[in-house]
Length: 266
Ligand SMILES: [Zn+2]
Image (cartoon, rainbow, N blue to C red; front, side):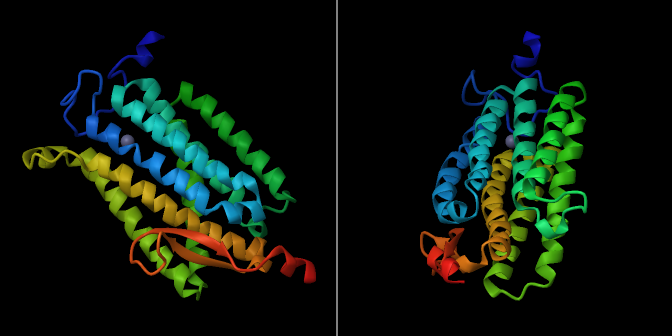
């Protein structure tokens, strides 16, 4: 039992040299880069608060869970333990499940599901069952993760096809670019390690952490923006970038131009 907590008990070992900077930390850069989640998550919680307050405070669960993704990712890369790997992978499943339960468009619910709370309960049951079964069969998590992720991606792609909103389209393009860059880093580190070793540059998995954290900020804000247009249209949702809307780079967020008074008058 203690074995699953021990250093390097996971079958996975990323390209970065082990114990290069410390005897306690297996992969220093991969561990350090996980801290990006601790920076981005609180900013996103703050930026999305007006939208969450109007729509549902449970929206905050996504970025609260992202803090745990960062925490477990740091623990995994610090120890490369089996438990670290499980926690890292499962926390990603829970973030995706939360996003799926909160944002999956109501009009696309299957006919036997009447409201979002029933839908969320169903997602919760699937997530709990998957979590339990991944202790017996670790690949169970990967299946559920891909199901939630790919379905959300498909719905988003269909949605964007009919979208004429310039700002949303720009955000979608940036999200895709960031996501492709992030995935390329992950794949390249996993399968092209001998090449990167020759160049003495074994840090691509760390760059995956940084890029995916930003990609999630972009992608989830896009989903939240589309959701706001359907669920709380009276609040006149708009897209802006933090810290300055005019800058080419920044974190996207939703601003609500309408007030609750607008709703009451309607
Ligand atoms: Zn990682």
